[in-house]
Length: 78
Image: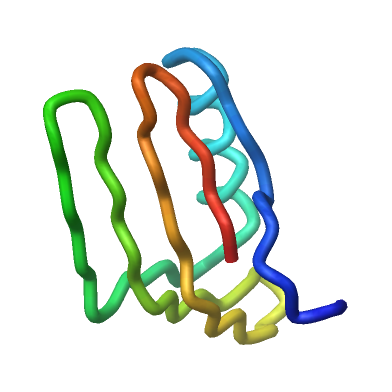
């Protein structure tokens, strides 16, 4: 990993976002979003938080997550 921030995924539409969220819940036995910061405008929303995730095999995933809803698209970077 380079450490460079890049989009992890971009999903368009409710069905794609719902599918992604379902997959996350299957992979992790603990999902906590800590220190949540958010900003929003008329059409865009940005959320940043520190994640305290534990996968089904016990591996910790403590990353900073940024979610952006930009006029109908959902993007995430970690």
